[in-house]
Length: 258
Image: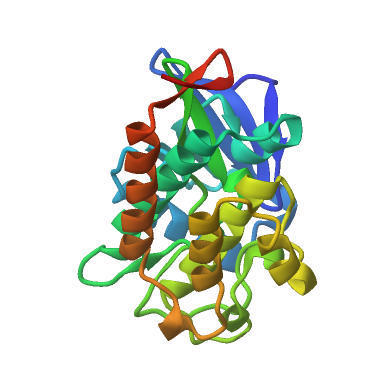
């Protein structure tokens, strides 16, 4: 581990490190919050992350869980979505591409057999970005709040401003992730963090009509009325095809029409 801190969260600090010659990210759990309960939560995150393999989920490399401070080791990416949004607005094709990446990672979790895995902590700070050619691509990270659907759901997991109404209860399903994804997509479009009391006003600021309608479907209060994440992928994929058909490309950070 190096002394270079990549960030601090509720659970601990994340440092740069080296593992078998590769640069990695190392999450070190705060000693002050170590307890039998929190160690079980750490073991659950380790268990879920170790069985997930998908191009749009942060790659788990390994973990330690000895008597010392537990370490959680993952691949090291360039930045996170929230950091980029604080610097500039995203172009339409970037929004569609990154939203598709996140949705496909979620779909992998939701289709887990025999029980779906719910992420339960979708936020722009948990969407990590890496460069492929001249474009950002996304990976969903942080399984600290994730759980299998068959298990008892803890109340109010993850960041409250992204949480579905049913997050205040133990009655949760993958549709709670769809709600959070809708708020994330809105944030990507308008560069504002979700404000629970102003959700409808924020959605009204989204200029793309298809995305605005999709967001509205994702954030309805009745979970059963929300689309599945697979349906969300279909809408976003159609938008991507539409942009491609129009010949929209990004050149040096500017959108141009061929």
